Structures are given as structure tokens and as C-alpha cells.
Image (tube, rainbow, N blue to C red; front, side, top):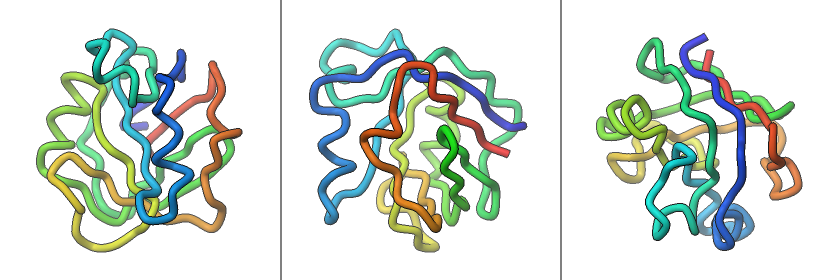
Length: 123
């Protein structure tokens, strides 16, 4: 396992990006995120990143499984130091922004899938 954490909460605006088809992303941050970022983030326990995520790795959020298709250079560092990245559910071989991890899967992640205690893993 390359990364593991559990959801501890989320900001008032954190799930709105997931519900808009043109956006379709979530922002992750350690639970000690600054207030202005916590409002738009899914907060989680501090995870231990043992290896950098890479294309073809598996991302699991709760019981939903996704394949990582691209990883931005900035995401590699910020996930390790801040538990921060943007997970974009559109797939694609190039990250939309340096802090993005692009993923694709058979089932969409829904706002209802995000609960306190939901695990987030990268294998």
C-alpha cells in the first residue's frame, strides 16, 4: 500500500465540485488544513505516503475503485507533506494541473460515498 487515510470531515463547499460534470473532482487535505482551504476540502487523517503514486496504480475510496491515469508533479510532493491533492475523475494521460491526480473507474464517486471513516487508499 502506497497511501492510506480515513475521512474525518469536509468543508461546506467540498462536495460541490464532485456534483458538477464539468469539474468532477475532490480536493484532499490533512485535517489540519488552513480554514480557507478546509472549506473546499475533504479532510482526512494524516496518511503515510510510502511511494509516489503512478499511472496504473489503484485508488480506492470506500468501496469505489479507480485506476490512476496521470499524476501531476506537484501532487507527488503535496500528498506527502500536506495530504493534499486534487483527484479528478475524468481520466486522461495528462494532469489538468500540477496538483492533480487523474483517475477513471467503472462507477462514479458520489457525494453519498463520502462519510466520516471512509478510507482512501492507493495501491
